[in-house]
Image 1 (cartoon, rainbow, N blue to C red):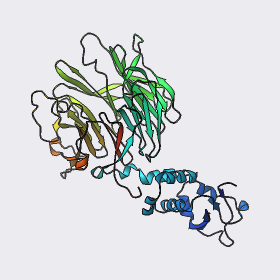
Image 2 (cartoon, helix red, strand yellow; image 1 turned 45 degrees about the vertical axis):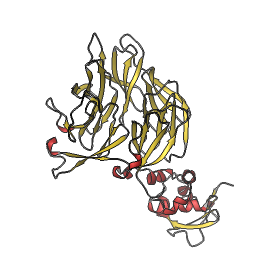
Image 3 (cartoon, helix red, strand yellow; image 1 turned 120 degrees about the horizontal axis):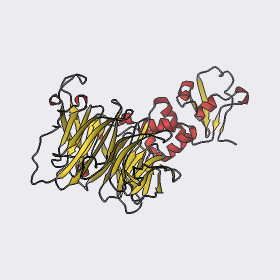
Image 4 (cartoon, rainbow, N blue to C red; image 1 turned 120 degrees about the vertical axis):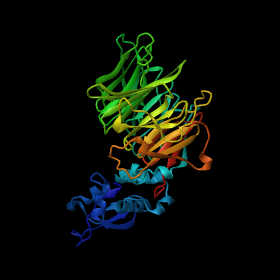
Length: 464
């Protein structure tokens, strides 16, 4: 007998808006509108649209009634009731899959709209197998996360309850980008090719390569994406050429190359490959940045590319307090960097880029003492309306304080004020240096030097 038997409603109730369901011997009543919220592919829809000729009584489902009660509340309100805390989340996930409503459960527990930067707390530790520390991390929109450590990639589902690990061909993965909860693009600086990995079944779906004029192999320096494109920054194995290749994200066919450089002599500027790629959707531009450490210090460049035309729209060359890391915030319409020498966070208005643009410090500019690189190893990322910057083992949260001027007016940066907050409780401060962080759902994922686990910082939501 199947786990559910669609039967006929009691006599006289054919036109009623009330629906009666027997789950594991317990009778539940709800409305047609509530069951419709489950979607057309759910088991509830199948029960609701069962042919009347095949029905004999109240629909029966051979499942746990207590778990069904929780999911029925989810259908009614869009949220889990407080009593859901008495159940194991994995049990609810399994039941939600059976009924075909896992997406509703995901939306209630790991929705990006629930992300609250000021209420993030370190709530969970995700252990990794082996002795290798994380080398790259990438999260999906609703909070599943992929972590590269050594030659392995470990994936956690959105509930963080299920873990799977695959072994790759890389000695160590340096670049990782989640394309879906089960597919990722991965590359390394010492192994040729960009690999598209099926993380669920543990195999390479496709390997993408770039060859320069001498047809030498190339390694991956950075990966990025937009809704239409997949981007990969390649450098030849001889380090005498580099390029950014644009692929169709649907069929993975190469579309064009941008920023291709063949390096001759001591042309250090063109010798710097892009080591970070950020798509700016509101401007349809790709930001590519890279830096190089030499005898005279750290130098780098930040470029904005029109992908469709292949034209360089804007470029900034950095030599004085070059960036340790750089990011772009579409919500704040600005580019942010953390200076490798000063360790300070600087901002540049994305709306008024030009030849005379200069960085403006978001705080009090400090003098660099004895050439010490205060910002070495610091990371900076933007998410929603905030900018997150790591300093050693601490995380700073930078937010704009609105001063009354309309955001869309042509105001100068001197009228934009940013304030810093240190994240976490006192016991969460310091610790080993933060190496990576990523955002997905209502969570932030953090990795640290020489630590074989991932920290989960989460905004509290109703349910778990």
